[in-house]
Amino acid sequence: MKSLTIVVPSYNEEESLPIFFDVTERVMSEKLPNVDYEYLFIDDGSRDRTMDVIHELAAKSERVRYVSFSRNFGKEAAIYAGLENATGENVVIMDADLQDPPALLPEMYHIVMEEGYDCVGSRRVTRKGEPPIRSFFARMFYKMMAKISKTEIVDGARDFQMMSRKVVNAILSMGEYNRFSKGIFGWVGFKKKWLEYENIERAAGETKWSFWKLFLYALDGIVAFSTAPLVISSVVGMLFCLIAFIAIIVISVKTIVFGDPTSGWPSMVCIIMMVSGVQLLCIGILGQYIAKTYLETKKRPLYLVQESNVEK
Image 1 (cartoon, rainbow, N blue to C red):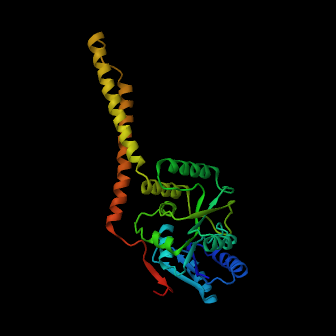
Image 2 (image 1 turned 30 degrees about the horizontal axis):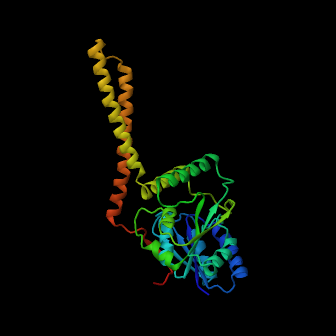
Image 3 (image 1 turned 90 degrees about the horizontal axis):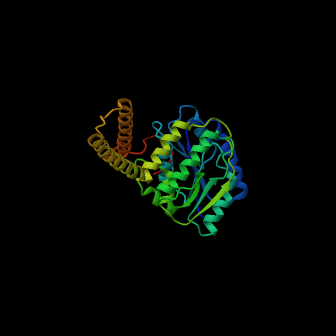
C-alpha cells in the first residue's frame, strides 16, 4: 500500500468544493478503502468563500490540508504548489468542478500500482457542452503543436492525472517561471497510459477560462515548447527580401528597355503597409521570446503563501 495525495487547485469554487469532497470521499471509501490518502487544496487567491469552505472541510476531516496564496497566481502556480507540498508517494491532480471524474481514481491507482506505469493521464474524446468556436480553436492548437513541437501534447489532454513520486520529482526539477503543464507532463516522459472519457459539464459555478485567457495560455505553450515561430519569421523575412530584389530588377529592366516610368502609388502604399505589418509581426514574435526570458531572469517565486496547515 502506498499513500496518495489528491491535489485540488481552486479559484472561486465555493459551490463546487463541498460536492467534490462528498463525491470523492464516497469513491475512496467504497473503491479504495485500504489506501492512505489526503487532500491538498490550493486556494489560488479566491475572492469568494472558497477558503471558508476549505476551513470547514479541514474541521470535518483530518485528511484535508491546504495552501492559500496571497493573491491569484494562476493555475500553473497552483499545480506546482500542490506537487511541491504533496507528501504522498503517488499524486493526482484534479479540478474541483468534477469535470475530472473521481470515478476514474480506482482505475488510475490500479494502473500505477499494478501495471507498472509511472503516470496515468486523462483525455476527453468529446467536447460536448463547449462553445463550437472554442472547440474548433482547441483542436487547431493541438494539431499545430503536434507539427511544430517535439514534445508530445495529446489532443484533449487534461491536467487530471496520477503520477508516481519520481514523476513528481522530475516535474518539480523544472523550476521555470513560465509554466505550461501540459507540455511539461509530456516533456518529462516516463511510462504513461491514457484514459479516455467523454466531456463532463461543471457540477456548479462558472468556468474561469475565457476565450482570451485560453488564447494567451496557448501562446505560452507555443513559446515554451517550440521555436518554430522564430524560424517562420526568419523564412518570411528572407522571402520578402527575395521578392523585393526580383521586383527591383524587373522595374529597372522595364524602365531601361521600354522607357516606362514607375507608377502605381496606391499599390506601392499597400505593399509598404503589408511589408511593415510583416515586420511588426516578426518583431512581436521575437518580443514574446525576449519577454519570457526576461521573466525567467528575475527569479521571482511562483507563488506566495498567505495561510497553510501543511507541516514542513
